[in-house]
Image 1 (cartoon, each protein chain N blue to C red):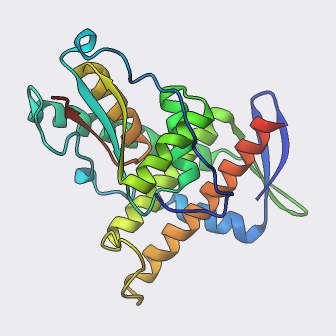
Image 2 (image 1 turned 90 degrees about the horizontal axis):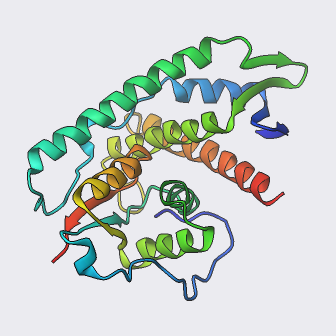
Amino acid sequence: VAETLTPELRPGVVETTEDKSKSSLEPGYLVICWNDPVNFMDYVTHVFQLVFAWPRKKAEFHMRQVHEQGKSVLTRESLEKAEHYVHQLQRYTLHATMERDE
Amino acid sequence: VKLVRAAKDQFVFQLGAEEKHVLLHLLKLYPRLPPAHHRLSKEGRLPDPEASQRLLDEALAEQRAESKKKLHALLADPQRLKQNPHGWRLSLSSTEIEWLLQVLNDIRVGSWVLLGSPEEHLKTFNAQTAPHFWAMEMAGAFQMELLHLLEGKREA
């Protein structure tokens, strides 16, 4: 994720919804956003807010994960829902894929 | 680029003559990203990976064709871009701004791909790479302007 001149933001502890039990969602697919040096941090945050209807703080937390750890698991969904999210993220030209969860 | 008016769902931007020239030149480059760029999965462990990939390719191709049509219509509409003593006024709805962000990012990322997807700095700057570098940077500059304007509006 390309850095911009915006102030540094500390993600802190952010409550996420990924703690749903795995069994209730089987079979599961992870929607992952991967780091690249071209998409701006602000843009990635903006897209996460739009696609997942997340508050800014949560969107920034995942954007930071992408930037600092190389990827972020955005959500775990059924095949159809994961496909839908990847389509949405790729419409915005983010580097997103879906991978089968073990 | 300056936001001069934001009322309900209508945003009016003021552009200088040079900004308008650059924006129109950039938008003519759309679509910039090679069609086979997007992969649905890295590992490919999906029930029918080929069909799923085909579905993604078709959806993105359809979106790009629609966007291109929309872009032509927008640029041909005399009500969208009007000249005034200070330059040009561009009127857009919030949905159109979101769409314009997608278009600009396609141009930015597509130009980066055409540069060989450099991880950090561009290694070769010459007559071949300069236009792609220019398009990548200019698309990014317009994107950031729009994002900051949207953010300012959200906080206001």
